[in-house]
Each structure stands twice: as C-alpha cells, then as structure tokens.
Image (tube, rainbow, N blue to C red; front, side, top):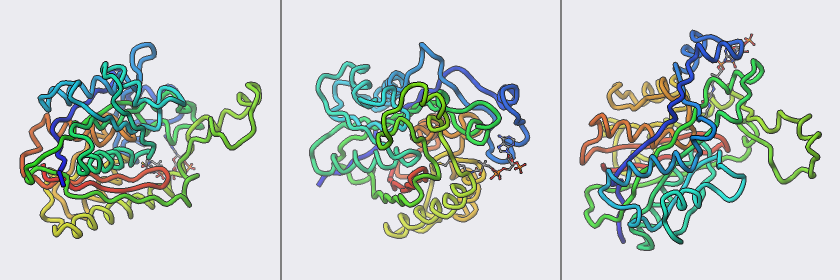
Length: 333
Ligand SMILES: CC(C)(COP(=O)(O)OP(=O)(O)OC[C@H]1O[C@@H](n2cnc3c(N)ncnc32)[C@H](O)[C@@H]1OP(=O)(O)O)[C@@H](O)C(=O)NCCC(=O)NCCS
C-alpha cells in the first residue's frame, strides 16, 4: 500500500475587503458586536465579472502546483469541495479542470459544507493509497456572499461568511515519514435543517418565478447559531482528541492544529480544551471570516508561507459544519 502526503499548498482570496464598518452601513450591526461574538474584523467578497468559484480555485491550484514543483498536466484526479458551485450542475470540479486545461482527468465534487475539505482529503488519500492515482489536486473554494441576506434580518449569517479558495497537491509517497496518518469522518443528519440553504431543492413542486420571488427566504441560508455553536464546541475537541489517541498520540504531541475557521470563540474553546499554546493553533478568521470548505486550505497555505509547517511536524486538520458533519485528518508534515 502507498501513502499520500501534502506536497504543496496555495490560496487565493478576492481583492475586495469588506470591513465590519462597511457592513454596519448595510444593516443594523457594529464592529464591537461582530468582533466580540465572532472575532471577525473583515472578510473578502467576490467581484462580479472577475471572480468565480472555479477561477479562484484555479489561482489557488496554480500556487499549490508551483509549491509542489509539478505541472498541472501531472495531476490525475481533482477533488473539489464546495457548497457554492458556479452552477447548480455541473459541479465546479469540471470547471476547474477546464480552467487548468486538463483533458479528461476525473473531477469529483464533494458537498460536505464546512467539513468538505476534511472529507476531500480523506477521499484523495484513499485513492492514492489504493494505487489508483498519484497526484491529486484537492480544493476548497466558495463564493458565499452572493447568497447572503445583507439586510438586518440576515445579519446573523451575513457578518460571518466570506469568499475564497485554497488548494493542496496530494502526492503518492513511498517514504513513510511525511504522510497522512488517518482520517475520521462523521455525520448526523438529524440536524440537517439547523444550517441550511433549501432552494433550489428538488423535493418541492416546480414553482413559477413569481412564487419563487415570494419565497426568497428559501434561497437564503438559514442558521440556528446557538445550536450550531453548542454542537461545534463539543465535536471539534472530541474528534481531535480521538484521532490523536487512536494513532498513539497525546494532545501534547500535536505541533499544529488547523481548525476550520468557524468562529474565533469556537477556536479558543478548542484551544483551551486541548490546552494548546496559541502558536500551535492557526487562526485567520479575523481577516477572512468563515469561508466554509476553503477555510482549512487557506489557513494551511498561510501557515506554510509563514514558515509554521516544518517536516516531521504532527498536524491535525479538524472541522465541523452543516449536516451536521465533522471530522479530522492527522498528518505527519
Ligand atoms: C451566530 C452567533 C455569532 C450569534 O451569537 P450569539 O451570542 O449566539 O447571539 P444571539 O444569536 O443569541 O443574538 C444575541 C443578540 O444579538 C443580536 N444580533 C445577531 N446578529 C447580530 C449582528 N450581526 N449584529 C448585531 N447584533 C446581532 C440578536 O438579534 C440578539 O439580539 P436580542 O438579544 O435583542 O434578541 C453564534 O451563535 C455563533 O457563533 N454560532 C456558531 C456559528 C458558526 O460557527 N457557524 C458556522 C459553523 S461551521
């Protein structure tokens, strides 16, 4: 059996910076509330006509490829995590394949919300382990700002979510040192409606446009913030401690935790629970908000650029999100 390792990382975020001050001109909110409850100071929103989920993913991928020292033509499989594809179908995986000029390689779309990237890494790892593929491009990219309700009614979500893309090149490794050690994935569909975007959903009768306009709320995401918070602070530390223990490690052995950037209060809670010093936890939510499937690869790419990732380090990626879904990947960098 082969192993997989992370050979290169990259990210891209739209240039347009949306500050808390700007949001307070659109809705009844303020910088103090947003910073205190979420830790977010600004986020990026896409620019119409310039940014798409697929082209942001391509920019992040080009950086990851350069970082890995391979060409796009070396990629033999794309795994693309997003909940905000450019089209309802086809998914953004094929659009990324087209952007990169790659003929006929398979592209798989993953829809596991904020846990999407963790699921995507586990899928890529399995395909590499089985010997089927050698060089897999694993991407998380989102444009969420276009679906947000930016009136006071939608402020609970509008202040949290942002746009961006991150990518990782995962390669086959015959050296057992640097590798993905394990993945743990979970889901609990009983809570599907606690964080949801209903339309365009298939299980309701066809609606006329007028009808759709009258039911705009179903085309906007809904979040039961308190319920999500309660589950997240339980599941994040639980899955992190479990994956460490099951692989023979203790929390003290962890060199870097890269949590999905859900909310700074959630990250601080995990940090406290695992008794990790600040330098062992990656946090960039202050600048990007919650970018769902893109948050972990963006954070990982920034951590790499900052020299925080060194060979041999024990690294854990951990996430929780809509579904509910949650999980973790444990790596030797
Ligand atoms: C969304 C979240 C920040 C809300 O924080 P909270 O402390 O639970 O706040 P509440 O929803 O109880 O609202 C408290 C008050 O602030 C108000 N409020 C909500 N959003 C606001 C905003 N953007 N600006 C100002 N006030 C706001 C509410 O209307 C409420 O007012 P009231 O007391 O007069 O009714 C919090 O629940 C959370 O972080 N949840 C998890 C979100 C998450 O991580 N999602 C992604 C999962 S992957």
